[in-house]
Image 1 (tube, rainbow, N blue to C red):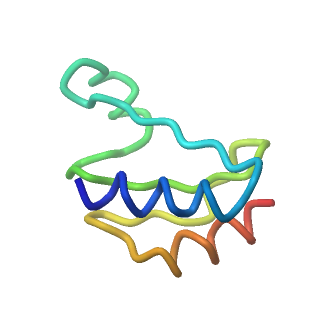
Image 2: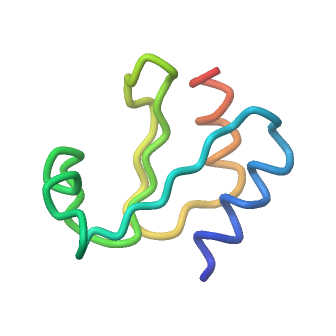
Length: 72
């Protein structure tokens, strides 16, 4: 999957980044709480949980890296 490849590369480039994958079909309550309406949806948050980036669809590596910098 393209999204997994982008996130794996971001995790390789930015030590300490945490990637969590949710199965929205099995975790529909969590998906509702995160306002996920389409898949894939990538959300980048700070350690305190503040959302700094959301991409519906496959994000670019550059988008994820910029979001990670904002979150750190």
